[in-house]
Image (cartoon, rainbow, N blue to C red):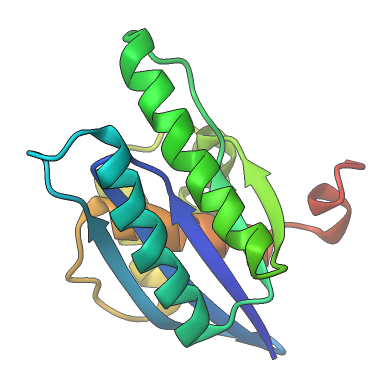
Length: 163
């Protein structure tokens, strides 16, 4: 059995989801949106996100993590904050000795929804269809599950950076 953590980084809301793969079977173990209080400044928010992410990792014990890579951002400050949140998530995985794989947003959308330009609703619907369940979660959690699903269904050579 292989457990894969999906992470959709954010400095206010970080989506996480954990899938388990056994043979051809893939199922969702857990998913949530880790929310940090908006009234807090950046560093306390990152502390909340880090603490809750470590709790999630300790509870579900993933072997690998798939994290959405950064994309072009119009606002430099927002991009910087997103990068810091992503760094917190990467550090949490490294602390727990979890192998990390990065995927561009377009790659995740393409692998899960069939198009690199799919919108969040299309990604959610296709993720639900592939897992055979209805997700009553926010897009942050759905995107995290999609990242994990992308990793599970990606060809091995692609994950190794060879393809």
